[in-house]
Amino acid sequence: MRFTALLFDLDGVLVDTAKYHYIAWKALAEELGIPFTLKDNERLKGVSRQRSLDIVLEIGGVDKTPEEREALCTEKNERYLSYIRKMEPEEILPGVREFLTEARRQGYKIALGSASKNARLILDRLELTDLFDAIVDGYMVTQAKPDPEVFALGGRLLGAQPSQCLVFEDSVAGIQAAHAGGMTAVGIGTREDLPEADLVLPGFAGATMEDIEKKLLAISR
Ligand code: B16
Ligand code: MG
Image 1: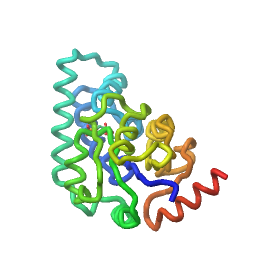
Image 2: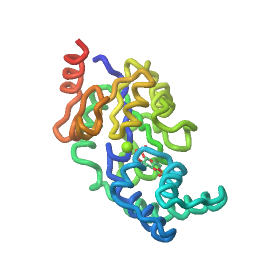
Image 3: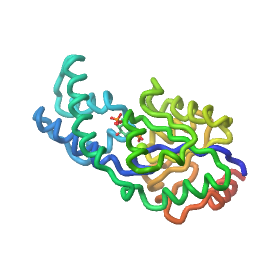
């Protein structure tokens, strides 16, 4: 076993919260008279709440004071939370629970590495919290991906060296963060979207760590 620690991004890897972020940002953008599309929403993935608001305001060419920005972030988050509080375990992406359960059984340590300040609430709603040895969320880091901070802290909390850490990520910035931290990155999505990933999987349905380790070993030879 080359890897001892598995680090998971949340949105887009374990669950699709992007759709709730989209509904909440779109409602806010509409109030401000800013057009906001699903394509625009792609730019917010993996990005912090404050930076997401900056992007929305940039799209509309709208300027706001720091106080107004703070209030808008709060408003967006309240709307987002109204959906998150109603999430059900059925919303976990296919194969994720089985993959985490089996990896734990095999002795891998597991951490979350998310930019979201709502990460703990989401894991609780999905009844996934008990499967994690460590949780790093948006409250615990100051630098956003592609800075490696979120994964470096996760690896440390699991007692693993970077070379022993395998990161699962759906965003380009997240893959770059893993690499900047000296870790190996599995992209969840398509090779076209994640060209820098060491390996790409469409999702966790049918995935096993044996298979992933074997494929990564073959590539590194
Ligand atoms: P919150 P991840 C990220 O989660 C989302 O992809 C991103 O769209 C969001 O703005 C960010 O969390 C902050 O979320 O407003 O809940 O603090 O992909 O890093 O798990
Ligand atoms: Mg993500």
